Length: 147
Image (cartoon, rainbow, N blue to C red; front, top):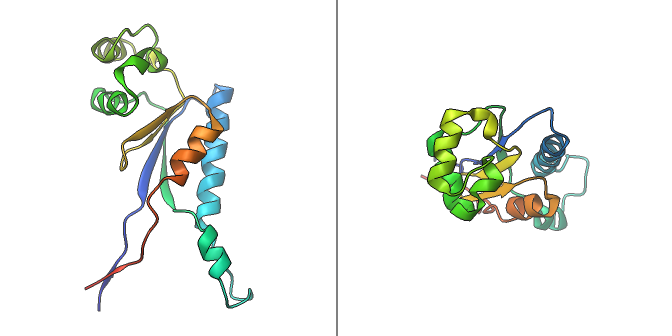
């Protein structure tokens, strides 16, 4: 019997290490990822009911120090709404303007931006509550599929 496990959701951080806000976001995401992947050890009690209820969904963390591509930016703007274009690309008036300005000068990109590609969500900036909400809403693995 073969078992296929659900692949992990991919969360991308568009990161600028020189920005304190971006470093904070990276720390939050790394902590959430580490917490999600913790498992019970053999020497713990055999009843893991309580721990299983607290289990968080694991995710794959992708860190990019590059600005998003035009296609990625288009998707991000679909997730957050075109009105947020100015919050992602310096001086942008709308989605089309953001894509044009970013293709002309990648330095116009305002990090950090965190994107959950699988579920169509994004967080602009370093709001810990918004990041944890996004991670908390990741679909839980309901088990494996037997074939």
